[in-house]
Image 1 (cartoon, one colour):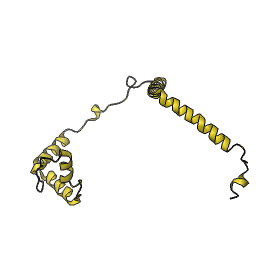
Image 2 (spheres, rainbow, N blue to C red):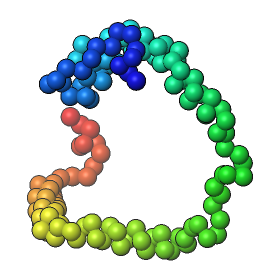
Image 3 (cartoon, rainbow, N blue to C red):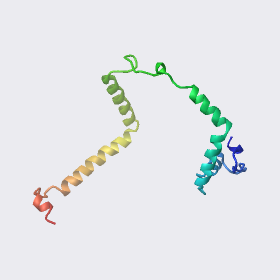
Image 4 (cartoon, helix red, strand yellow):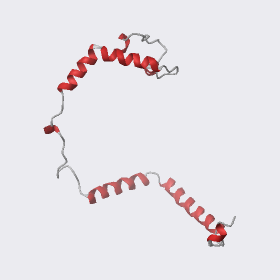
Length: 130
């Protein structure tokens, strides 16, 4: 438990557990990187840390446990495309008014920029002539 580590203050009543935890590990409002290092050293020296390290050494995964993708685990490219197209269609038409506004604004801006730049020369010498 974090409460058993040296230098850790008990949580006070109005303080939230998240902000208390951040303050204790040195990442809160008054950041103290040295405090974080002290807590790391205290955790590494603790009995729960040693138990966890021993359990991790014993629980090594064997190659037989590896998940290999087989023919039954995948779908064809067509079905991937079909599923993504369907999903995008659902997402896009969830709010048709938004899409209508987008289409109208696209047309308005296309006409606006088209008329503004209609009669400009397309000669590069004029573009870079300053």
